[in-house]
Length: 254
Image 1: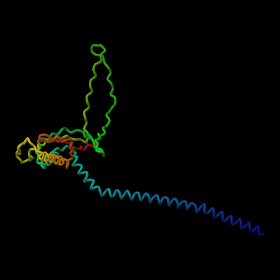
Image 2 (image 1 turned 90 degrees about the vertical axis):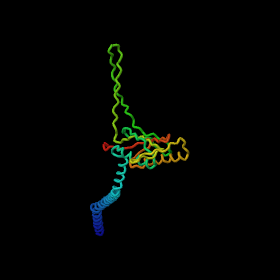
Image 3 (image 1 turned 30 degrees about the vertical axis):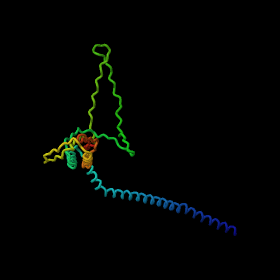
Image 4 (image 1 turned 135 degrees about the vertical axis):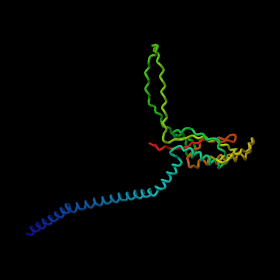
């Protein structure tokens, strides 16, 4: 009898344990797994929100700098105009010449050409040639040999192909040759240009003063507002010849 009661109790206990296990497996575990998935999604969303907040902060900072960028762009547009506008360059030359009290003898401008990268200076102060784009090496078809008029089997000379017209790029430059007479004063719009006495003997002090004036003139060309690149400066017999490039970019940059 006691054994039967014990078996009944044991069976009841097993049933309760089985129900508890089934309840945990079928009810509690899905809820627990769902809570883990929700926590994972929550962390993912928090990370995404943090990333978005950082991006928004960067965009807000960039928006605050738009005015400064627009101002810098306007300054660059004055340095590199959308057309040659050589009158601006002439005004810059006149202002620099007036500053050093030298007479502008002539200003020669070459036709506009495509901008070409010039040699650069590396960190060690050595000139390095700019990289050039490889030339088109595609082989052109060779014309077939034809018999001469006399039928002697000699082929007629092939006609030389015409050189293709050079198409200018939107980035262009104009070569300017500026000649200054350092022995004469600056000639302005209302000046009559009184000549100074020419002396064949020039002392060291005069040469030093002239060199400083030439350097000041070149520095004045670099001040802008137009961007001018000095290529070469030659001085002889009281005259200075400056070779410079003025840059501009057309609006058609496609």
